[in-house]
Image (tube, rainbow, N blue to C red; front, side, top):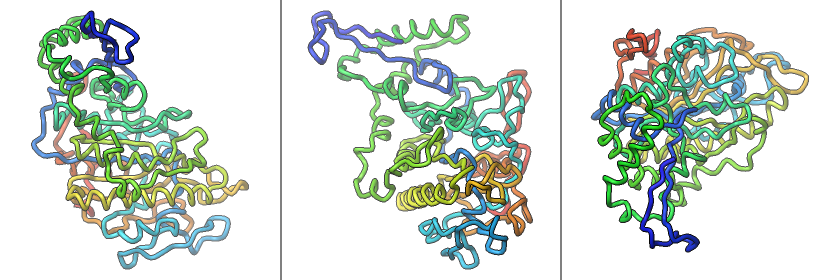
Length: 448
């Protein structure tokens, strides 16, 4: 924790103390607290891209039921088919589930992938944030998420805005709120989390910017905080990165992006708030405002925003859960796409909504569906892709990919391509000095 002493004769903002002070803690970066100076030093190795492309990764934690969303099984027997009917979309020949009428109305701007394969069956976000199996390179810290990789490869667009932000509220089942791990890159490349302690660190409570005019004294305080973390002395040149840390703390850009009170009320109304939060249990709430925050953050310069939306683990009462979560996602997702499009950002921002696996074809005795790693689904938009498509399909019972199975890594290769990174040639050096490719599979040619 960093303490900056004020004038001995000044009073605290509430008048209680005559000794003014400011405490700025280390920002929350994944599971480890690091000073901003350390973070910026690590990010500098990745360089800064001249183009700003972004990804918004909406994790539907728990495993959404593919056969109740994007590919209704009208010819399946009653114990498999479910309660929903298909509806036509703006694209002739493509039908989706009835709880998504707004998405249907803008299907020309979307892509549904009905045949996602490669799920390992873990009840976590790892594959949906990295594309890799959790055990891959686990001995070296694991594979980095796409947000961490972007932080390394491209660095910040703006020194005062982190390149990787995680909006996932902490869930009782903690793996569902994993916004993407830094893996073998180290905690400095993890996501900035603006909730809780991290958000408190962004507030210069009771201290005006004028009181921070003496930057050199402030930087000496950063040196003291840094020395507690970097006891080995491996990092040098703190002045440059301390300056960047101060830029974040004194800039209004990130704070403005996180302040929804500055958004047009009509825009906020289009997104909705996702309330009341139902079927949450040990998972995430359906916070539609996080989708709006994601747009504001990428507009401010963030390269990757991840969030956890809803709790889709529908072992019981599956159809009412889908009606609740699906209707709210329908509103928030379409508001986001419309918003990005109106602002001229849609071709530069890729949006994806998906979970860790699908759900069983057969409905259980509790009117629910259980875990089904064999096949799952994804909804995509933006990023300059060839939209207005439904890619792949499952067999009549929704058991497995019938044609065009799409692996998690193919989707990630496409995300990297949309971000201006060639996954076929780009590598990141691991701690042993070996270059590691971002994915082992090719880009989805249907989309580029």
